[in-house]
Amino acid sequence: MADPDTPLPQTAAELRQAILARHDTLSKRLQHVARYVLDHPDDMALQPLSVIAARSGTQPSAIVRFAKSLGFTGAGPMQRLLRESLLANNATLGYGERVHQFNASVDQSVSAHGVGSLIDEFTEGDILALQNTRMTIGQEGLAEAVALIRKAQIVHLAGMRRAFPVAAYLAYAIPQAGKPTVLLDGVGGLSYQQFRAMSSRDLLIAISYHSYAPETVSAVEAAATAGASILAISDSLASPIARHATQTLIVRESEVRGFRSLAASLCVAQALVVGLAYDKERRPQRAKTADLDAS
Image (cartoon, rainbow, N blue to C red):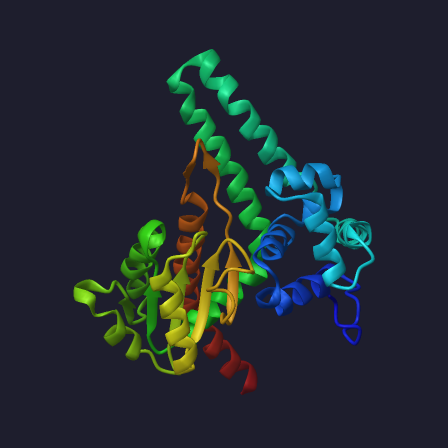
């Protein structure tokens, strides 16, 4: 039940904050709905409950119970809030719908054109994911992330399992921009010792996607205990690595025939590294200009 003393969310941003604040107190079924609301606000804003239930793998009654747990009288008012916010911000509509249409066309393509058409499917899926990443992160989000890296004394990197290639790339590239970097790989069972090396002057970049690698979650918890800043790269604000993060960059990769890409994640990683290098090169010039202006 909703707390009667808690004000009803009035904007999409307030709704996100309310969901994140209550997430851990919800049942597993309602946490599933919460994740879908956070990850697919356009679907929640524009689609009927029957479609949302089918896409999210839940029941319409669960969506209604979730809305009521936040203080709404039902799902309709919550959807209306999201729809009004979407239109007020002139957000691009239909990304989720385009993804669903793309997935529906996959089987027809291979049936008609053979296995070679897979190159079209994977590239089209990555294009959609890259377009979405550009919208969800934005220029300001990337600039803030670069600033976190720049201010850190040492950058620690945690990305296990599917996310490991992204962490490995960052471990190779960030030192090229002059920033000391440590890859937390847990080799030899030394994860605990590696985690203990983090300090309050450092930054942990953690990369993980559903279903989140426990080793990466442990690294985030250790960084939070040490007082280090945390930059999370993940697919949801409800992600366990986003919970303690100073900043979270939302990246939702494409998935074709059960295979998830890393194209958008590597694009973000490269943008971070190049942004850091550019910022480092420009800072002395900006300082010199400031000194001349002061004199």
